[in-house]
Length: 352
Image (tube, rainbow, N blue to C red; front, top):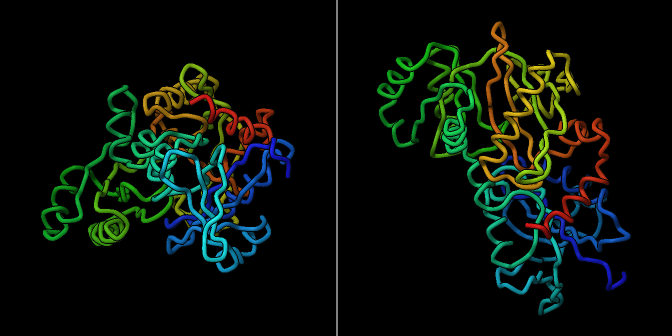
């Protein structure tokens, strides 16, 4: 390949519960990169935490990369190096930009972004602070409160408090009537979440959430439509590109309903009053800016049944890029195909 091409690393996989989805997203993003401008390197992280250089997208799709890839990693020194195993030593590759496509912990939470900042490598998407804040549902709620955004009432619980489960249950039952949602604070948007309709389900949900994180949120259950907003850009240039609606096959849109149930549906530009569309977009951009997001994020809401109140749910700073993922579908409907905005995000990385 020509030396004039910039070297872009697509970083995918990871050690979170969303590893498999990240692999699909990574392959999709890699295929969208302009090969005339960029020399693409595929850097995968296995579930065990091994970093390997992958030969081609087909190996990602088949899963063969986990066994066939060569050991490789980003050096934390400030000279933008990727080291690739070569016999008894390592070959050095100077990296121009990294596009992390890691969902959940150890990738969407500021850890990888911090490494890239140390290495002085430009990267697509949010910085380490905004990634960490938005990954933590509790701190996202604190920021949403600070800018006056309506959201579900919540009660924080620490895992060590569960040693006295009766006390925790009594506190939660005094806080809110059933049903309630129980969520790990730092486990992505779909994993470890329970909707509890009674005390037995609450206890089971608290234990499940504690398996995923030491910090747990118990939330008021909002009944309404699930609306997602795609935001693109940064600062004053941040724009809400459009809306989508989730029609979940299950009682709520958990991991199984999202990725394993064909009856779950996504609707682009859903039918609703124009003033509500505008309100959702305005609030999405306000939260995006308040969390100092950069590049792209998906901001999720409820449109409450009966009141039509717009209720903020959460923000995802590395939205999925699978065949059913909302973010690319919204951008496509807005006239921005993936090949266009993926390459724009790479260019935007140099502007940070």
